[in-house]
Image 1 (cartoon, rainbow, N blue to C red):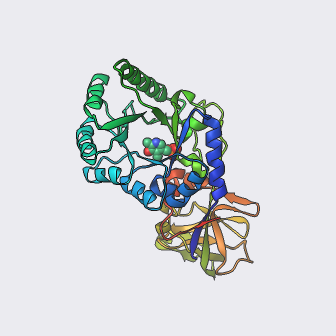
Image 2: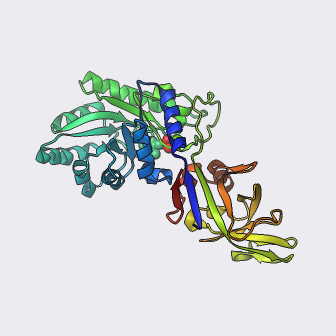
Image 3: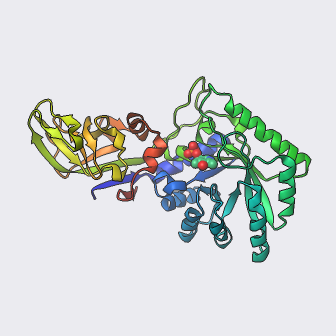
Length: 371
Ligand SMILES: *Cc1c(COP(=O)(O)O)cnc(C)c1O
């Protein structure tokens, strides 16, 4: 194998257990496994979660839900952002639960449910101030649309927070309030839902209980990361651990003289004679292109710098201080080796991006190995 990630099943189970413990037994944890479980492999991760008692999985697209059903997963599957008309049939055929973002989606879904002879449950998303998905319709219009859809079952009220990790911003408080008032008005009109949810990893981790409702949607934390909050955030109540280690083999090791350019654009020039290695992972595998001359890997138990441009299939590293390492040996891009450790958060910071993008960016060519 040129490059692979090792994913710990026990680690996923442990993070899921930590999430459940933090929210308590009254709150359902929907495990977010969209984007191939943030690069970790949606089918395998979902199998682990189901074995641990997960009742809800959440994906972005209907086809992600279909893949899980075809692999035999039986949990409820919430499809969070797919309102394309051609994907509606999949909700019925594969027992998926759509999130409805606009009231105009209800009549065609209702008609499909009528023809199928089976009611379809859905969650209704409110745009409480994020300004992305979700309806902005007032309570009266919602109540009427919900009542008219006689073959559908309103099962959840949902919203999403735009600035949940930013404790310098009033936006989260405003969104929580807007969502609560909207639900209150709907309740006054006799419209209620079994589940209410708006919290993802950051509000869970910092204990924003007013956003918990009775379901939370945890993604990044399942994979062992939380992200950084801004401002006066209360202490974290959630402890999770990364579950993925990323390795790649050296496919060339050589000596270069002082002054030698390294890689595209000669972005690095050897200041002295050096021993350099070519790691078999590049931006096609998810090594951020912006790590040119900034990233690090672990070679023979020590942190060493990336040299020059990250290319599509290869990344050059400095092995001058690692005389024992040989062509064919593996280095660690994410994970630990001896005393040295690097995680996706650190890689993201060096690359000027977020850990979500690093994890989701791990390419198809990188083999997934479950341990
Ligand atoms: C991706 C996503 C989540 C999960 O967010 P994390 O920060 O990874 O926990 C929750 N809700 C919605 C609507 C999402 O799109």
